[in-house]
Amino acid sequence: MIFWIVSGALALVVSIILGLTLLRGRIGDKPPAAYDLQVYRDQLKEVDRDLQRGVVGPEDAERTRAEISRRVLAADAQLRDGGESGGQPSRGGRVAVLLLVVVLAAGSVGLYSQIGAPGYSDLPLKTRMAQSDAARANRLAQAEIEAQMPAAALNPDATPQFLELMERLRETVAERPDDLRGLTLLARNEAALGNYPAAYAAQQRIIDAKSTDASASDYAYLAELMVSAAGGYVSKDAEQALRAALERDPRNPPARYYLGLYLMQVDRPDAAFRTWDRLLRESAPNAPWVAPIRQLIEEVAWRAGETDYSLPPLPDAPAAATGAATAPGPGADDIEAASELSTEERDQMIRSMVAGLSQRLATEGGNAAEWARLIGALGVLGDTEQAREIWTEAQGIFAEDQQAMEILRQAAQSAGVAE
Image (tube, rainbow, N blue to C red; front, side, top):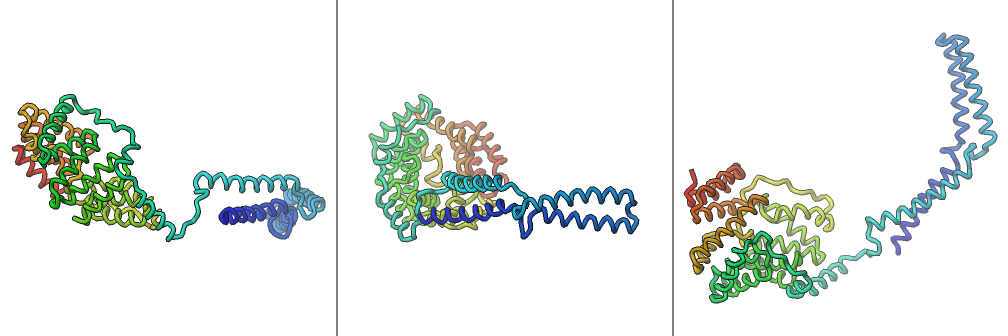
């Protein structure tokens, strides 16, 4: 209520100041006609001086005096008739004042209702912290948020052969529930298919099988799959996975990225800004979390009170290292994990994975390790010609990054396509 009282008082004061100016019809102590009269008298004196100096002739001087004299008489008459108002139309001034008050009041309210936050009270720090703690305590579990989500649409690019092989892989993993390689392959390909609940279920089985040997990357990938399944919402279960990842490696980049997202969702932009700002400054420019952070961090900084913040420039940095949270693609472990399938089935599955990775890199790009993985997989399949084309294309992309080129060169040598 105090805000509206102060705003109304300011609008009223401004309206009064502008209204008085309009009603008086002048600026200063004299009406406008008095200033005009003084100017005309000065012009008459100037004509006399010009005549004495010979600048104008007698006839021109006489015509100029006559014209100025008529203006003097008109200004004098206006001054006598207008009095204190200076001859300005008082009715028009009152109408203008009324319109001004209406525009200032109604316009201010309308503008604030569009870009302001009506009804949003100011909150002391203690209250805001308490609300954030309540938001943390009332965070939905993964199952609760998924129950509110519409059914996920699977990847429309998945071929019938790939779907059939996925069913075969699920059956194989079900027969050998403790096979880490099979579970890894299942988690990655369920994610590639868009079946995130099944993907994080497989990833959770990997963590359970590894027990105390589960790494920070294992937990970070579990959290990422959960967030994807929840449409970007960081559930209570996803937060626990993030905390577990950061306990094992406080500098794990994917976990830090999703922790910042969680902090934003529980109304802690100050902590989210610190987390993302450090991560942004420590990351290679082509790391997968850099683009979304750069898109959001200026707003996060503003909400955190960092009004002078500006985005750091993108440095020339080596390619981002791979981690569990990178997009799935076929590697040596994937190929070996498919060994229980028939030769034809295994070949079809790996080729489907290769095609998916190749299409993603062509449309969205990726880091050097992902390009190297594609080159290596093509080499294993015996597609040396395509592997050579990918190697050539990758050289053009990462030509100025020596570390990336070393990763790519090793993959090309393994595939037998390096010059």
